[in-house]
Length: 460
Ligand SMILES: *Cc1c(COP(=O)(O)O)cnc(C)c1O
Image 1 (cartoon, rainbow, N blue to C red):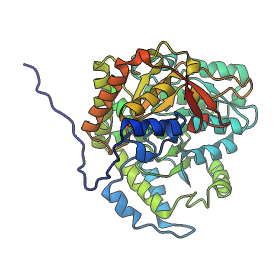
Image 2: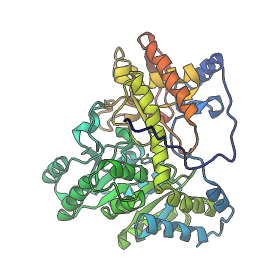
Image 3: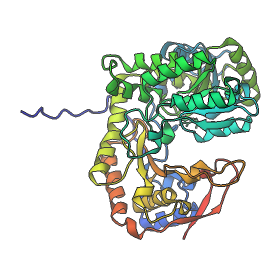
Image 4: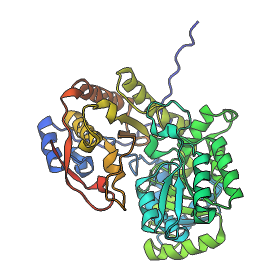
């Protein structure tokens, strides 16, 4: 007998709603031209279902909102800072904490402290702001993610893994002294939200200890990574996400966090360090760029919401439903034959624009084009993660040509329903059915830094 189906459902109910504006196709056409075919430049009121990013777009809980009312807005020594510090020590295990306004604030500080000009920073795939801060500090990023990560069809269960052979080659070539640290992301964003295994982390820890190299953990999506370890890695089925998160952190020396993702807040981040000497430097530098070391650019209420968000983010029920919703959308698209990155990642669905629009050259910006088409079709906002996001090589001035040319449908946490996911899938299918008629774009304006945010385009 077949086991009867048992559905997951959200471990919360809705207490307040936000009305969204519905648009006509004509309105969307106008809005898209005004935005230079860049979904980042659309007004949010013109968007129906916003899958641009999962960053800062989560719905906070009633407990978090209540916590906001207890904000201690003292300039120095706010009570909420100590709550945040306690939550980070309890759930992540790092010793010292410097709050920052968001993730890149922490990246700026750690890069300035740990990178000397000429250093190499190996990492499991680049992230836009992370690499930029490494470069601005005079370093060079080196990709050491396993080859499978660059293949949208590989079903490797841990495509976020670091290739220790690639790291060893860098160490042999440049010497361990030239390696500033290993920049290790959990649930690798640019690879499609793909996790790192505990086994890989342990091997990386052993290797880096031997060579006296630190690991700085980009822990933006650590809870999602922990969930994948729980369901995919031998020996973890009976451990809680909370326990796995702490074990991951224990294998690293410090972390940068964009709390706008996993930690369920609209703004905030931090830098966490175990080394007291590095912490002292960081708490001095944060004063220059963010604010005093007990607020780092945040209001007391923001730190309180973050402390509560951290505790909610590591609950098994929460993560199961969060990833369950992403998988629900992914399975619908797979059933329609839409080419997406597999296995389905933690925070969104990544459409493979090279396979969706094979008739376009990468210099015609297939992913940017597809994001624009999806918006036109239904008002669903997605974003490009391909050649535009990759930017240019700082020495040659040439485009980087990434293997992966993706459109990211990022799912905000606790915001949309299953019916919204159905509407998204149907819209992708509509565009998929007329894909052969779609023409590419040309870039008409290119900013110097992180061009994907503000570049403008025109149809070819
Ligand atoms: C969002 C993000 C960052 C940067 O954080 P911000 O809060 O946007 O400054 C860094 N790393 C990863 C993996 C991210 O997803």
